[in-house]
Length: 589
Ligand SMILES: [Zn+2]
Ligand SMILES: [Zn+2]
Image (cartoon, rainbow, N blue to C red):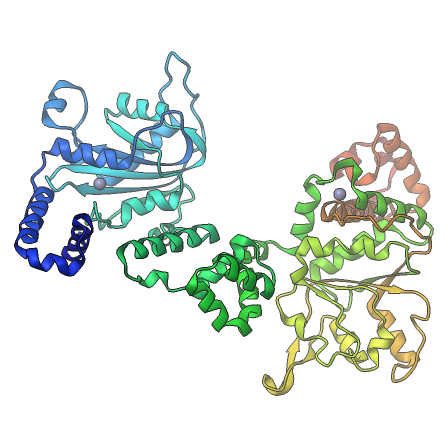
C-alpha cells in the first residue's frame, strides 16, 4: 500500500479530511512505521508456505476440471526426516512436468476402485515454474490443461505414492489462461517470477505463454470491471483512468444488453447509463450506427475466424451431419420434400444438389454453371434456398442489389461467402444496374469491374467471385429481350446458368421456418445419389440391370451405399468384361 493511500484510509477511518491529518502528522508517521514493520516482519518458511497455500485456495476433491494449478513445495527438514517424501530442491522443471504427466496417465488405483490406465496422454499442455520464497524455500507451480475433465485425487495419490511428492491442487483456477497467468505474471503477493518457465504440449508445438495467459475478452466481464472501477473511484473520491467511458465500454454494453439500434443505445444510456456514458453517447451520437456495427463485428470475430478456417463445402457437410433442431416436425424439411415430390417431372433433386455442390466447391467458372431455379410464385423455389442465409450468416451472403442502384456490386467485396439473388431478372438488371458483360464475367469466375465511389481507385476495383451462388427467377417473360439487352445477350446469359424448373405450387409455404440443417442434408444426400447414378450410367442399361436387381435383393437403397470392394464381390461383377469392370470402377471413384 502506498503512503498516500494509507493516509486516505486513515483519514476516512478517523473521520477526518485528508488535510486534517497534517495536524497530526507525527501520529500518522508513527502509525505508518508500525504498519510497515508488521508487514515486513520475518516469517518462518512454514508460515510463508501456509500463507501461499491459503492464497491458492482449498483443495476441492470433488472438482472435475480441465485445468489445475498444482504446487509442489520443498518439504521442511523435520517432515523430510519423518516421512519418505523426497527433497525437490534439486529437481528440474522438466522432471516435475514429466512426473505430473505420468501421474495423470497412470493414476493410483486404490481399493476403492481407481481409474484404469489410459493409453493416450491425458495432459494437453503444461507449464512448470520454479520459485523461491522470501525465506529461500524452493517450490514449483505446475499449470496443467487436460484433453478432458478429470478429478485430481488419483493423480495426487500417484504423485505421493510413486514419486514421493506432496502436492497441493488448487481448484480455483478453472481457466487455462488464469492458471498460466498465476505462474508467469508477477503480482503483489508474488513480485518475482521464474524467468525460464518450462513448457510442454502434447502436439509437440511451442506455444506463446504471454498470449495464452491473457483473459479472453467478454462483454459481461468488461462491463463489470468498469463498474467496479467506478465504485472504487467513488469510494476514494477521485476519478481513475478506468472510469472514463470509452468505445470499448460502449461495445461491452451493446453486446451484453443486445442493443441493436441507435434508439436502443440512446434509451439505454438515458435510463441506465452513468454520466460519463451519457456524455460519451451524446458526443458520438452521429457515429452510433458505425459503433453498433463495429460492436457486432467485434462480438462475432471469434466465430468468424473459426468459420473462415472451414471451407464452404465442409460447412455444408458438417451441418448435414448435425441433428435438425426441429425434429420430425421440421416445416422446412416437409416443404422441401413436397416441392421435390410435386415437381418430380421437371426438377431433379439429385441434379440440383450436384449443381449446388459444384458451384460451392469452386465458384462459377467456364465448366461450372450457376444454378437458376425458375417457376411461378408459390412453388417454394425461394423457400428451398433461403436457409443459405442461416448457413453462412445473412451478413456474409451477397443479396440481390436494388434495381437501378449505382454501386450495385459494391457489397460483393465485403467478405461474402455466398451469392443468393432471389427473384433475379437478368434482362431488367442488364439495362444498367448489372450490365451483361459484367454478369457474364461474374458468373464465369473472371475479373469484373466493381464501381465504387470516386474516392477509391478512380471509382473502379477489379474483383473475381470464387464462391458458391444460386439464383431464382419467375419464369414468365424471363428471357424476353428489350432495351439494350439483345437476343444474343440472352443466349450468353443462359450459357452461364443451369436452369431448374418448378411448375407445381406447394401450399402452406407461409409458415416454413428455414432449416439449414435439413437443406444441407438434401444437398449432400442428393449429390451422393447423383454420383451413384453416374456410376450406373457408366455402362449400358442392359449390363447394369443385373446389378440393380442383385443390390436390391441385398437391401441396398441406392448404389451410393455400396463401396467399390462390395461391387467386386457381387455375382454380376464376374459377368462383366474386363473393360466394363474398369469403366465401372473409374465411375465409382
Ligand atoms: Zn509461488
Ligand atoms: Zn430441419
